Length: 111
Image (cartoon, rainbow, N blue to C red):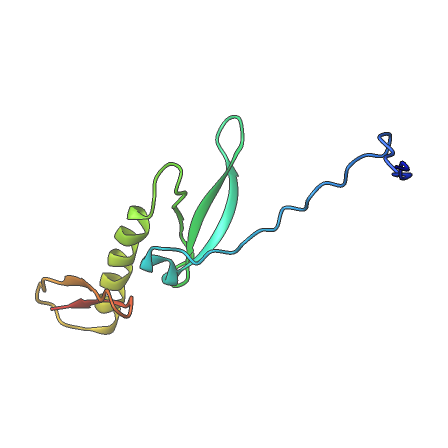
């Protein structure tokens, strides 16, 4: 039986696999009104994910590691109320209900 010449050069470094970033769709429906922004904040600086409101440009904390998307939901409600107040000239107080459609992922205010 003959030994085959196997080219095993141990001195060469192994090639590292590249990490491929997979862009996942956000699970919360509230992200449709926001743009994802990474911001360095805190002491020491830590990269955090924030949502930038498409209507008013406000930055809302929305990092899934710390605060989640409840702030996005609350800001969306206040944005929709402001929009309704700007459009309507009704002086009476109106109670608004926040409605989220689970099928289509749309949100709206209804009186």
